[in-house]
Image 1 (cartoon, helix red, strand yellow):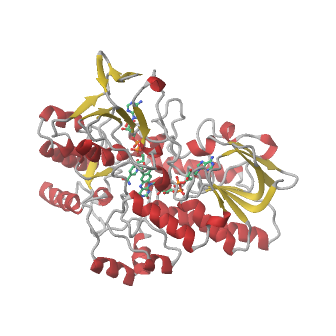
Image 2: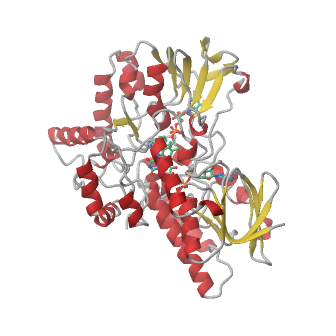
Image 3: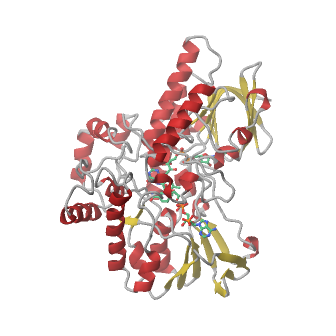
Length: 512
Ligand code: FAD
Ligand code: NAP
């Protein structure tokens, strides 16, 4: 029997859960289909040691319910993965969402039928359901990227991907471990793995910029201060393009308009305060190569100061623009390389040539390990969508429509796919912002749109080619105005061999 709903939502992370809550409040019927066996999305899957948010907890949380934000108690400046997952579960229970969420259900295909104006959604198990609207809440960073190293499946030890971490945790005590990658996930997990492992090899292709998290317990007073003025706090943060607020002053000057000493003072203050607002020190850090170089050089000097062996420090020092890859936020990352049991292996010019039954080979050196951690990231922004065989009007496939890179209107809809919405889709601010704010904006837009269609007797909506073309041009023009496209980042799809190089997020942000 086919199940009929007004709305079918794929994914039960923060986007899918809020979408369900909003469509219910419109009186619409909905079903959420989720591949995992629980809610939380990112925070359900990424259980690696050290996983935590890098947008402050009191901001990295929903604001649609004041009761929720008043009741929930965040304990640390940057919440741990278990705490965020607990929050996601609390939201599911508090808003009684679970009854409409079907877990352990991976969607394989979705097909639009123009005559009935309905989507038919098929799961990997072969079950079907139908919906007037299909909302993809499948996540920007949910499709794990595991490079196809020769011999990958021959490894006889334990392989892990940070985004598919075992629920029972992993004890690396006394083990020889190889971590591939030095992005945000690696940078959070390496210091903790290094505390346990007998020997840790870190295979680095590109050095990353990272700033200290300066994480700490939240005090009762600071929590109360925010809660007393939560609406005003949120309103202030929403004025920022990234929707991330900071105790640091809003920048007004170019990095090049102040003296060297003043610049160092500002960077030092931001370094001590910790976190992503480091890049907000001056107005032009992401626009002017010369301005950017001053911030980059400040961080490079910190790396040289922290890492004792100058050769290791040099290898850990990025040469690129700071911020054009996602800035990392760490707790003790660079200092970890002072441990005698930690070795940095440069695979930039001599790549990992193969994975063997006992470890990894780089050039003529073999590294015997008991476990390999693939901290190799995600097929970002499009991966989870294109894993599904989505067929729109006249049977056209999304994979075909996006062959040369994703094309959307506002990151929300795409030509040829009626009644099809993507929450934080390519072409939206999403990953360049506090994502929960961006998610809430999209969910509210989609819900308002559904209400409008219903109230005005329309049975379908679709982006027009002109609107989509203009939006894609605008997204590209804004990106080209910045330094973002200047390095091989996952924002550009450069981390996945064969993926079209298109700058996917919308740089101008989600500020109001
Ligand atoms: P997700 O949480 O990714 O949820 C998508 C869900 O869709 C998943 O549960 C997945 O199983 C499901 N799904 C996908 N495909 C299918 C399918 N075919 N069938 C059924 N189900 C499917 N953002 C920030 O703003 N601040 C942070 O500090 C931050 N930290 C992060 C840390 C990590 C380790 C990672 C990986 C990302 C982080 N992000 C952060 C980004 C984060 O992804 C978002 O903040 C947010 O959690 C995304 O929510 P979502 O619901 O859109 O997607
Ligand atoms: P990532 O940033 O894409 O990092 C992947 C790492 O793997 C990179 O160092 C990459 O090197 C390396 N790699 C990939 N393929 C390789 C290969 N074939 N050989 C050698 N090295 C290879 O992925 P991530 O660390 O999982 O982070 C993804 C995003 O998730 C982040 O940017 C962030 O938005 C979010 N995140 C946030 C936090 C947080 O602090 N809250 C934590 C984790 C993740 P190259 O750089 O050379 O490609």
